[in-house]
Image 1 (tube, rainbow, N blue to C red):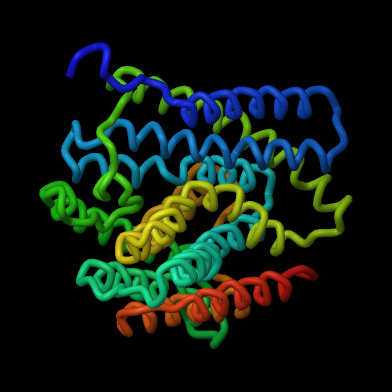
Image 2: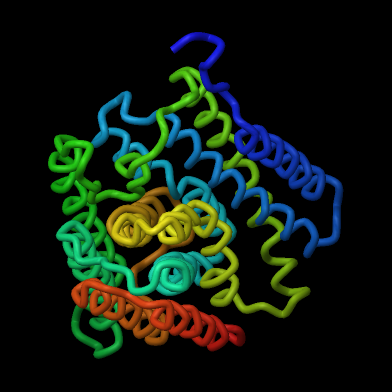
Length: 366
């Protein structure tokens, strides 16, 4: 391709994303160190976290398949929820264990109900009944169901007062190690898959049809590094503003984690699922949306448990409240039912969104 016809390295959307990332990161820093109103500082930091999550996703997407489709999928799996990882770590450092528990469950619920529902709603209104009956979607759904069931076992053991209830730390560590082991077992298959397969790790944007990367490798890696560093700082400022903002707005820790933290860390990244559904690629959209909560269950939650138990942070266990577990299992079973049915409609999507709203409202008071 000649220089005259070559596509630009940075297109308009790239420049807008970079400008927004820099501007919001600076504003979040000014809000933190300048003593701004706690609610304003919180909102600015939340917006910065969301935009930096989008920048991480864009940078990984621009790596394309140059490291192989499987390796790119694994890389995106590791980095896709980087801002949320930082938020959870700083929250544990501040002793906000209930926020972290709710955020982990909220991330799964936001994807399985809100984002999936919006994808079905938008795609259904534009294209009618959507077909989802792909083998990979069913595989991801089964893994999701098994992972969430495993996450629920410590809670059930605690509720019914089994002998294991007195050892929730140890049981949570065992479950976390086994879930990370399951993730490790899935890596070889992910690394050797070809470009026509979807990864078992989120996110799968690298394996979906997309334009050839415009950014050179050095620029994509550099952007990843910059976005990661900024995400660490902004996440710290976000958590610092979280407690006073919760007090001012009278928001419970459960609602803050379930809705605010979960959406800030995940919704922008998973907007690609809604875009794919709108363009008629319903099977791809379904895989993209389901892969992110799979990562939460298989990697992020177990990793946070182990880090908290061995680094002196506030101890995080997998013992959740009954309402969190019921909402979690309900969302996963609905996703599984829709997957095995093989199709979706806009009305199913609207119902999922409404259900998410009802669950979120039920946690407003704690």
